[in-house]
Length: 324
Image (cartoon, rainbow, N blue to C red; front, top):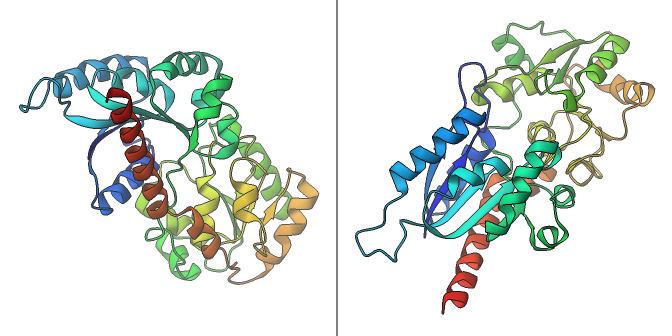
């Protein structure tokens, strides 16, 4: 089985973290040794979107030498709703799409995503709550949950002192981590900022951090704050849990499921008094840890990739039945 994965989240110097979860999923799919996967990434934005269609047509618009009826890829899987449009330039048997959040929440992007759904054979969302935001009742009924998952090799516990020394932080300091770009309004940096001020801890921010160094910042913190207004999935919570670092999050995306029953975490609507109380033990402890890795493992990239591969195979079987 040959598959092409298309993403409009190409990283650059300003945003080296962009699209890392898609690349992690492609790596996990390749590790299954049951599918040959090629990845094409392009930058976000309307100009790049138009250029992507031309480039995909130029690179993959032809057919295999085996004959005009045989496409080069059996699966073309787009990540993010707008990406599905240029991906139409590639001949294939099955077209797949995973929506991730803003593609079904932003009014203009939601319209564009909704318009392409009739052309999609395999429709997926990153989480079960996100399925309910897909435009169209019929589309929601056929949508599957296919998350990208957390890379347990990259995200693991690192001695807090070692992480802080690597990042030139005070080994004895009290630090909270906001694991997102403050410019993304839905992530609610203002809430994290208010909480840090109320506790007297220093607030660290993940801004333009390469994926390979994110685990250092997580392990350096006393706790990770994810006070989002909304989440398509909730990968930051899983990354913190995989490092056994305390995490406080609002009940959006997969947060309620992932954090359920994990002592030392909080999943609750943002209330500065409640969150401050939950943080006290972690700010006072020299090396606060939770037992979160086993819960994060339920959402790891390996099993998630297996679910994607199974969904591809099932979609191909349905396609063969229709054509037969």
